[in-house]
Length: 218
Image (cartoon, rainbow, N blue to C red; front, side, top):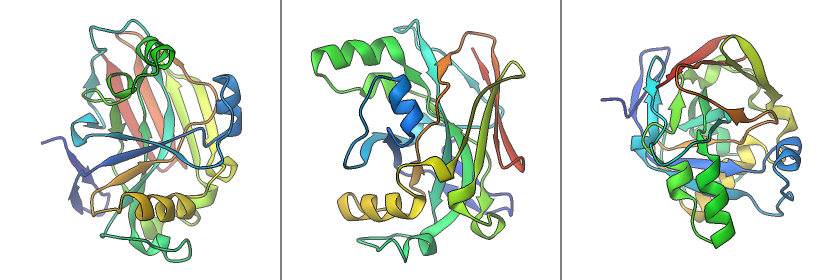
């Protein structure tokens, strides 16, 4: 079963809802020609979008332009409803690094037609995540560093300190709108440098140089 988060301390939590945040890094919004939003931009992926490190991720046959978007991932450890920002970190089980794969051509067509983006964002294996570092191993959620390498070339690098909304702010917001359950996770947004991947590419994402995610594109 691939729909589970495996913590480095041995804890295993089944994957719940995958909440993804758009336009949370100013430079990425700029490179996409988008404006920053006054409210968090949220979309959802199902548990079947999850893939574990070491997986092979196929490019769907209805797309010719799949892009990588590396992100800090927050895993929720217990149910939370309507929590304040000051309480938010009490509900975190751990952190990982993930890739929000996006079918850019499908997304562009949906935008032009004013249609939902689900087929561009939420397809099978579109949200691989590394093993999870327990909360007590991360000194500061708002000062994490993430990187993505494609075929050993650094293509994305960012710090959570540059996010428009902090981890605590995102947890609080989502807990008020949707409510959060144990096993849900939040993809907190991607820094600039997104780009296409091709069959045979090998991707490695890093979180604080302490944990990696390794993916091969089929």
